[in-house]
Length: 260
Ligand SMILES: Nc1ncnc2c1ncn2[C@@H]1O[C@H](COP(=O)(O)OP(=O)(O)OP(=O)(O)O)[C@@H](O)[C@H]1O
Ligand SMILES: [Mg+2]
Image (cartoon, rainbow, N blue to C red; front, side):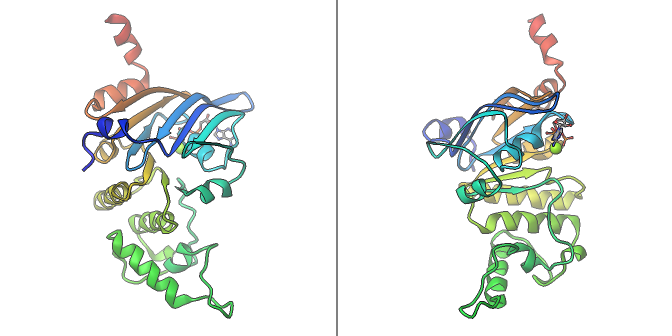
């Protein structure tokens, strides 16, 4: 278990560093001068109120949003992200807020969508894809009655698990999760929490956006707080407390600081 994160990270280089990220949408300043380092084997909880810029930031990393200004390094090299394929090629996988699974396809088809395995005759190699799908789901402790079940027939938690498994299949270095716990029951939340810890144990850098503070605190090593497009706090274990994070999210801590 990665309990002493600060100490661990001191000797480890970040996988990715983002600096001076500015993103405007017309008159809306969605991100203002945001910095973030993503380390291997670390789970960052990205929190903040509605509209704070969390999804926008993940979309910058995943190439959906192209910011007006940014400096990005990946494994020590300066890079630019110009489209959604660039991050995928670097080993960055994203599980979006709306999941982006195809309801009418089964689990195997969803896992391999856009990267199907074909045999030497150019035909889909169904048995190989099924085998890898089973192996991946087993390894992540995801139980499904069949890998041929249609995604529309799965529960919310199972769908979320398939979306995370899809992200895992490409052996990613970074996984971004936007609201993976939304609309899930207690048991399913616990299962997604375990999947996040599983990613961390594989040395993946994880950024998870969530409004559910208790749930993300259970799995994260560091909390980053956004407020109105700005990064206002970055808190590592063991300093993470609900009171402190809520104060940063709402901005009530500014009064506390003035009182001190
Ligand atoms: N494509 C877009 N066009 C215009 N405005 C946008 C776009 N994407 C985001 N915004 C605006 O940027 C701001 C930040 O939005 P964002 O979706 O990043 O918030 P969030 O922190 O993810 O909120 P939530 O917790 O509600 O998901 C909001 O004011 C939003 O309206
Ligand atoms: Mg969002």
